[in-house]
Image 1 (cartoon, rainbow, N blue to C red):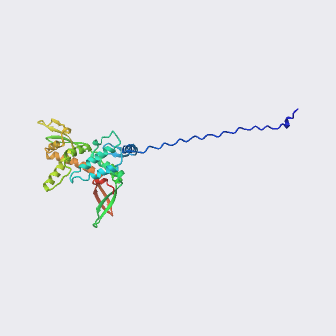
Image 2: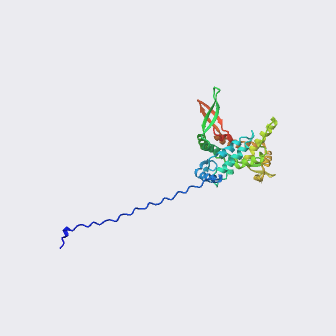
Image 3: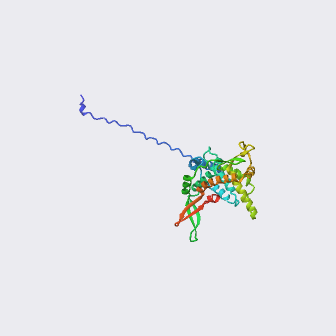
Length: 307
C-alpha cells in the first residue's frame, strides 16, 4: 500500500497571463485654418454674447448687456469729431449706430432710450472700452496748467445714485396744450437727419450768420422736448389733437414759433430740469492741491480716444 504521508506534492503550473492591449490613441483632428474675415466675425459675435458687460439704464430701471467698443468703432467715433462748431450731428449718428450694434438684448429698442440713458451708456462704455482714467486740464491758482486724471467709475456711480426720473409734463395757455418729455435717441437722430443732413460743412463767416445758426440750434433744441400738441379752437374747452408725430421737424418748428412767450418759458423751465439731471453726469466737481474745481465733460468723439 502506498504511504500517503510520503506522497510527493504535485506542482501545478499557472497559465501565463496575456498582456492587456493598450487602446490605440486616435489622432486629434486639427481645426481647419481660418480663411475669411466672415469666419473671424462669427467667432467674435459668439464671444461677444458671452463677454458682454451689463450697464444700468435709468429710464428702464434695469441693466442691459452691451459689448465694449472695438477698434473699428473707435475709429468711427474719432472721425465724427470733424463736425460743425454748433451741431454734434456726426457723433449723434455714429454713437446711435454703435449702441445698436453692441446691444445684446433684442427686446431693447435703442431709439426708445432717452438722451440721459445715452450719456450714462457713453460714460460706462468709455470706462469699459478705453479705460477708467479721464484726463482733464485745470488752471491752478498760481497760473499753471496741470493735467489730472478723473475716475470714470466714480463719476458713473455718483450719477447713477443721484439721477432722478423725470416724468412728462403738460403745459397750456389760451392757444395750445402741449406735453413735454425727455427726448429719446430716436427723436434726436430724426431731427439731425432731417435738418442737419445737408449741413455737413458749416462755415460761419459773419455775425449775422452766427446769430441765425445759433437761433436755429436753439429752436431745434426746443422741438426735441415737445412730444404732443393740441390746439384750442373757438371754445377754449375744446382741444383738437395735432398729429404731431406725422409732422416733419421743419413743420413742428413752424408750429412752435407760434407759441407765446409764457408757453415757451414753461418749455425752457422743463428743459432746465432735465439739464440739471444731465449735469449730474457731465459736470464734475473735484479737489486738487486743496482747491476745488468744476469741469464739464464733453461727450463726443474725442471722449473715446485713448489718452
